Image 1 (cartoon, rainbow, N blue to C red):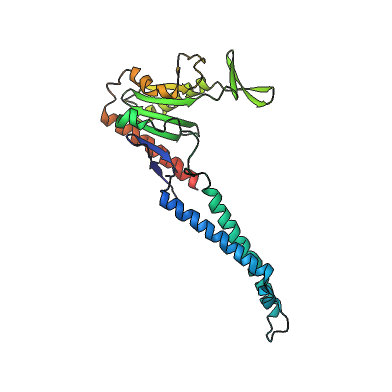
Image 2 (cartoon, rainbow, N blue to C red):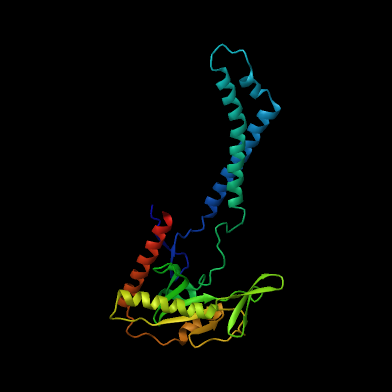
Amino acid sequence: MATGTVSGDDPGMEVIRPNARYRPSERALAVARLIGALYLVTGVCLAWLTLATPFVAVFAARGRAFSDETAFNTLGWLVAIALPATCLLVGAHRLIGFIELPRPFAAQRDPLAGLGSSLGSAYVAIRGLVLPGGRQVASVLVGPPGIVVLGQLPRSSQARPMGNHWEARVSDGEWVPIENPLERTARDAEAVRRWLLAEDNDFAVKVYAAVLAADQSVPRTAATAVVDRSQIPSFLATLPPHRTFTADRRRQVLDRIRRGVDANAERESW
């Protein structure tokens, strides 16, 4: 069953994401928590009936005048044990799922979240783009300058640059080599450019690469800029407008991206 894409919830800017989940309303949250609490109360009451009353003894009593006495006793014990346990598990699962209030479905910090007010409808954000062959591109912006592929630098406590390569911390005092995140973002941008060029050989859209970093001490490279999240609007403003990237061209590119996102969402659903 295909799941398709969801155009997101950032006012002012369209956000395309596969399998995105909207945050439920406060009323829906209250109903979900109430249902979970009712399951728990029901489970506790049934457990009390089982342990503190002769409820099960009625089913376990022997000497009944029918041939299926053993099956009847087994069914009684099964109901007495399984039903309270099921209610308790379901209730606990529902409550735990909504324990992070008031944002139970909040994902990890999205670098593009909240930018709609500053970027407006001129830009469209794409999250979780997977190119043919399985290469994943986390964040993409499509707008007047062309396409901007955004990577993200790990925290300084988790990774660090060491000359021409990067290292990641795997334990106290132990570091291992990893792929340079700036070079990876540049390769992601080139992969996006080639993917779109294969669809339309007559038009090559400009594709830029940038990584988001709170630590501005990391130097940029010739192919990849280093910006703070708050600097994204000003960084985009410095990019020259792609004059041949008209509204019709942008719509064609976005349709191509949507098809790619839809195809990947369908594959994951199977």
